[in-house]
Length: 387
Image (cartoon, rainbow, N blue to C red; front, top):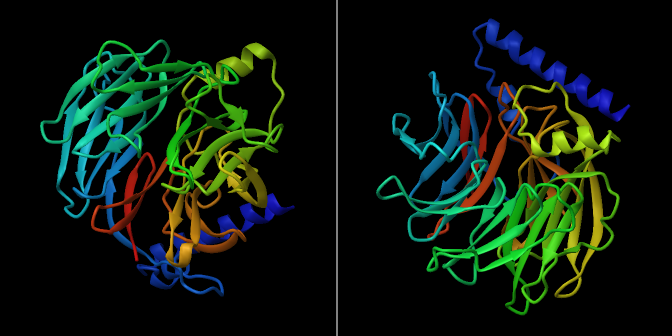
């Protein structure tokens, strides 16, 4: 019944947009309704800074200090190679297409590093470091399996991480170009779709990852990760958001598990999915995890939401004043970003929707404190300033 209500309200909202557009009305009141809170004290406000039309983009990364966004997708033409597009956040015509080495293939994740560099993991079994200054790949590592996720390190600028399709986690030191510094097997052979590197209360580095079995914590002194306690058999974990850099708050997103024959399940887990619209999605849940000790988390509130039936999605935790947080997720029923207040999961605000599902979502903060939220669909890139 809840899912039917979500679909009904979403269809009514789209119908009103269509009717107002056909009458030549901007629909400012309706758009404003997507950015108003429902009875709460304002923690943050979201102002749409810019919108860019894109074609076939799948992944994004934000360099907040340089006010540059990188998107990746497949180029048009016979070769249909995968390219990067460099977008100036505040200039509508500042787009630059960058061709990548032909064996890179599709980029699955992008992470902006300090000092004007970007790391990205790709299905061509490559972990690449890209220079924003020269627009070239300056270092490339060969991976034993297709790359699905990547991250930098808050404690040392020389370490980068790669999560692989076969469940492995690799640690690289960019001062050593021959081989990974560490290599660890995961708890399953499912793709590691998310990596976050954070610092706990004692100042120790913690690496969090997520695959379909759930969120894991990797300890540098151990060869294998541990599943976050209490998160067994919750469904298919499709996203993990982490409050950086403290990692005191996590939100894991799930969709219901569908039992399939092993061959089909393996194929679905390893094959990149198309970003084609999926209607209203599937009724899933977002689970809040709060740190109780240096290595333990406790499950807290749970919130229902419309999630993708196929894709591994992205989400973000946005820090606010007085040590409070917002959780942002690309809701399938809205084709836009919905935010909730943590820890209660009280709905906070819905941002201006897209015409297709949100494929990527990134929060970034510059060295001078400016905060941005970017969201990407196959046809549009949005940049919101957070105040």
